[in-house]
Structure formats: C-alpha cells, structure tokens
Length: 475
Ligand code: SAH
Image: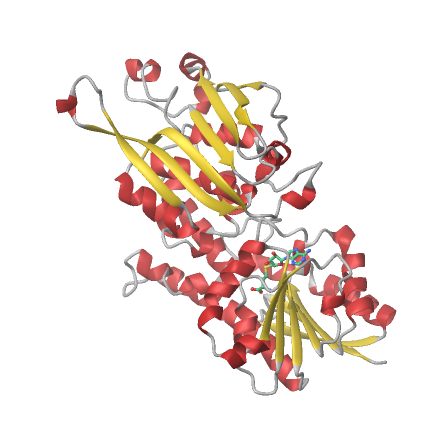
C-alpha cells in the first residue's frame, strides 16, 4: 500500500520538517496491521517526494480479530486487497506516522505550517466505489486537480474488464496539514468500508479532521454516511454537530437527504436550531455595532466572513476589517463575499488580514468596535491573558463585543454526550458565571465597562445557548 507526497516548494526538502521525518533516513514502525515505512525517493531543493509504504500483514490482521470486521469466508480473510489497496488502514498509518504534520505542528519550522505549498499525491491503487465521477466530486470542490486511470482486473485477460481500482494523482496548492486531513477522511470514503468497528469516537475523529472543510463540502452527507459505515444514528449526530458549527450549511442539509418536504420533526428542529442560532448571533452582534454608532469595525477571528457580510452593507459603517489565523477561512470568506465581483465602493470598505489574536499587532489599532464572535473558546486558556492585552491594552477600540457558548445550555443538545464540547476544537466552554467573572475582571483591569446579553431562545434555568459581553471604553 503506497502513498507518495511530492512538493516543488523551494527548498523542497522543507517537506521533511513538515512531516517530522528526516529525508536522509528510512523510518519504519511496526503497527498492529503491519509495518509502516517512510522514505524519500527524491529529496532536492526543487523537488522532494516522501513515500509512505505500508506492508500489511493479512495473517496478523486475522489473528487480531478485534481490529477486523467480519468477512464472508475463510479464504477471503487471507486473500484480499488489503496489502495493496489504499483503505482505512492507510488512513490509520497516516495518523500513526504523520500525526504531528496532520495536526499542523512542526517543532523546527512552525512558520511553515500555515503556508500553502504546491503538493502532488499519488495513490497507485485507490478503490473508488462510485467510480471516477465520485472521486472527482470528492476532491475537485476542495481545489484538487484530479488525474485518474482505471486499472484493468488483469492485464493478461482484457475481456475481464475494468477493476474498481484507480491509479490517481491529486494536485493542489494547500497547507500540508489540511491536505493530509482530506486524504485521511476521503480514502476510506472512496473504499466505502472500514476495517474496524465504528462508534462515537469515530464521530469525534471525523469532526476533528473534517474541520474546516467538511461542513461546506457539497458531498458532506455522503462523506459522513460512508465514513461512519452507514450507521445512521452516528451520521445524524455528526451532521447535527457540523450544522451547529456552520449555519450556512443549513440550506442544503434537508435537500441532500431528499427529505426537504417530509422532514421529521426532529430534523426540522435541528435545522431550525442551527439556523436561528448562527443567524441570531450575527444579527445580535450587528445590532450592537449599530447601536454603538460605530463607523469602523474589526472582526477578530472572522472565520468565513459571516459577520462581515452583515456589516458591509450597514450605512453608518465606512470601514470593515476581518482578521483570522486561518488562510483557508480567509480564502472561503473571500469567495463567499464574492470579493472580486463586489462594487468598488464595498471593496474599498473591506480589508482581510491574516494575523493572530495572541500577537500584538498595530493593524488592529484605530477601530471603533472590535468583535470577537465564538473565538475565545478556541484559544488555550493559558493564552487568554495575552489575548486580552492584545485587544484591550494595545488595539484599544472604543468597544469590544465578545460572544462564547454558554456551557450550561449543552444539556439541551441531545446528540452531545455530557462533558463534551460543542466543537472538537473548543479548549473550554464556560457557564454564565464563569464568563461574567472573567469579563468583569478584564473590564476592571483595562478600564472598560461591561454589560451582558444572551443570544438565542433561553431556557428558564439553563439560560440561552450563546452569551455576549459588550465592553465600552471608559477612558
Ligand atoms: N467569528 C466566526 C468564526 C468563529 S470560529 C463566526 O462566528 O462565524 C473561530 C475562528 O477563530 C476560526 O476561524 C479560527 O481560525 C479563528 N482563530 C482561532 N485562533 C485564532 C487566533 N489565535 N487568532 C485569530 N483567529 C483565530
């Protein structure tokens, strides 16, 4: 089983830093399913290729029945495509050997991680159940150029016809960590099977790896269903959570299932909840901006630009800036706002910045209002101190609007197991008392007044799903 990763980024050997694997060495690790080797067939300044070669041990897999789904006959257990075809075992090997790279960590070159680089992946035997059209429908919306050649069943017997295996080359310009998550999720989706039992943990894996691209993927529901081995309750749970994290995906959620007109009550409520929460959050924040009579706004952690879309047409607002640490989100924001086709006037009004909330940055200075919508819970609690200095001490806008989930309300999400966060990237979620205490302290420390509002339908005891603090500068 083979996957190659090639870059022509210069110097191309940077690939070694991104993969945490020195190009000069052979790296071999024994896993439960066999041995995974990583080596570099070429490593020059102009072009560098890493190969992940997995020697699957089919006999070992049978011995360890736990990691292996029931099969039809005895023969099938020993004679099958597992040794050579890309499958969930390849995804498992990717997670084992490229775990840090996939998580976007590079010990020696952290600055490389977020840089999109030219990448080419080859998979000499990729099972595509659903054919070339599905292969394209999965990768092309993510910005890949797909080259695929269907392999014959046996070259010596042309009359047997074609197999379901393809030799595939995928080209893109992307950060490596994002591209690895695409492959990790989509290889088993194409194979349409998994070599192990799937449970709730698999939903967590999918959500963690599928962020930030899955919620808006046109084939989202098919990907979720196949990834979770068609276990409907798990698929519903995953889609539910994706919808909650991305209001814009709502419009087609019912249609994709063909259940637009005969939606069950539960599904309707689910859709409505996702829709109203996201939309109401944006409306509430835009309402505060309006009431403050702000003429310039910076949206810190703007994500895919949902709030920017509301702010841009507002009459009194003459300057709107969106900032995010994720290149990919900014790219999506640019596309969703249709920046290239906007009137010159709106284009002049808008600026998109790549930056981070945990570094002091003079570009954040001089705004009437800074908004920080559903962002603080993505920061490690240990970084909140520097975040508040960056915003309240250095940027020092006249007002700051912060929203975050109210963790008490999580009890109302039936699909969310107790103690879990609403989103896998959340580092914490606070009760109303915790948020209010934190906000009061910051207000006191930096000379702001603060008031609180809730967003979404409130439960009499648990409160509303989202909480908002509005800070106004007193000096
Ligand atoms: N405000 C948007 C997005 C919320 S998701 C909305 O409500 O739709 C959280 C966003 O915070 C993501 O886009 C993520 O990339 C961004 N983010 C996380 N850490 C950040 C940091 N250190 N600096 C800037 N943005 C950050």
